[in-house]
Amino acid sequence: MGDDKSKALKLKEEGNRHFSKKDYVAAESCYSQALVVDPSLTSLYTNRAMCRFNQGNYEGAVTDCDVCIGLDDRSIKAHYFKSKSLQALGADLDAACHHAQRAYEACRAVDDKSLDMTMAQLLRCRHERWQRREAARRREAQDLEREVLDLLAAQTRRDADEAESDLDRAAIADEGEQKARAMQAIFERARQDADRKRDVPDWLVDDISFNAAINNNAVDPVTREPLAKGELIPNVVLKQACEWFLENNGWAYDW
Image (cartoon, rainbow, N blue to C red; front, side):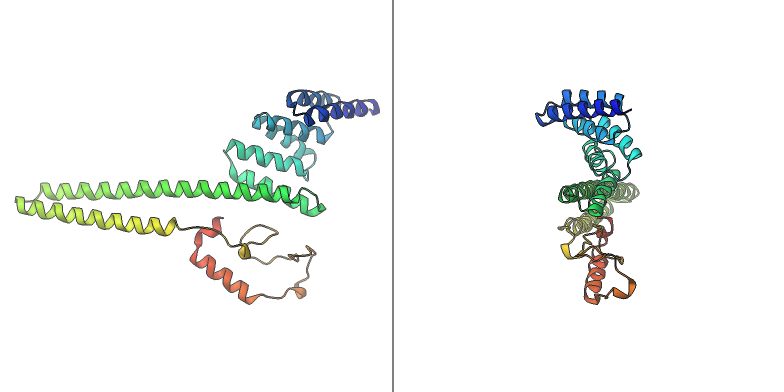
């Protein structure tokens, strides 16, 4: 058993040397050989995941991260690179955000030097998820506008077909155009309101959970030390400001 561990570590060191030279193919090969010898060495999975990620093999990187997380649920690298790989795949940004959050929380728990890196990844994932949701919202709004205008035009045509005179038909057509312009104006106002700059201000964000600060948190935001209920001091002004912002910017609940 000791010989296997020693052999695996030597192969890992060789892989690290290749990795430092950006020879990811050779590095991956070394890590794979080491895993055959000692499949319990969790760092081999995350190292190989990094190789696969840098080669664009995001599915393979996710697989390695999953195995590592199964062996060590608190692995910062495994959660971090699973988040990056999922983000690169673009299929499940909710999961990418989840694993970025897990990596960030794991860093905070041990005061790891990767804290800023995991924080940046979490914010990138959330920003991309928000952008995707916004794009979907715009498409849905455009589809709805087209559908409403088509229905209005169809009703105008039916009314015109039933008119008894050219004068009535002209009046119906004019009324239909006015309704269409009014409806377009309504959609345009809604679009302008929805498309205004949507940023959550820094003072609203709980820098522990990275959510809008609407729930109590039993951790001091500066020292990160646990707080007893009796030590909590209500900040009424901040609470009212948060409530006002969320009341007037309901989209922030999805941020």
